[in-house]
Image (spheres, rainbow, N blue to C red):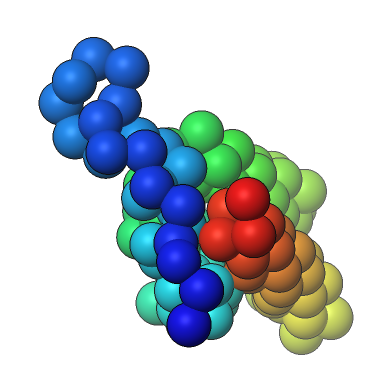
Length: 109
């Protein structure tokens, strides 16, 4: 196993640096957590707050857009549900792939 890059202390001297935390995280687990329990949970595992906020805003915006564009919430078309679910699954897949690649890149450096 190759040696993981470490930055023993962050710039404020409080703990491991961002790259060290990211490199120590398992790429597959970050990707899996972004898909299964909810959008962006893998970013929390990797302590990547900006990526988590971006994913949270995008998924919340997707929900709000679906709610605003549906004229009659009592009679939701099954096709609209598939579009909504498809958008969330696409966001989950993209964020999972990005989390995986970011962790692998951090391990390579």
